[in-house]
Length: 123
Image (cartoon, rainbow, N blue to C red):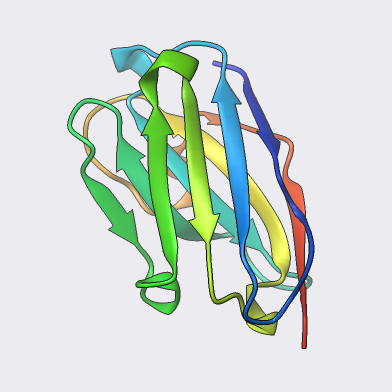
């Protein structure tokens, strides 16, 4: 599956952004969609994940209550609504897709990746 991420930009602390990830297909073979981020000098880390079939979601602790992952089945698109942004949220954000059923939280478990979109939060 091909993924196209968009929506990054520069925002002040406390602001909001919505990232979008358009997938070329939605099928059971790519059932898990995830958002990851990678800050300079840091490893890529999971931010949130969702399962197409039943909308089960996962959030990493630092974003709980601030970020929301959602999807539009008709558009084969997954969103990441980010609110109350902090400077430490600054990173390149990637969407990814994984075949199978179980939620996974490590980059190596994902089969397809979007190109990344930069989010910069100023203090």
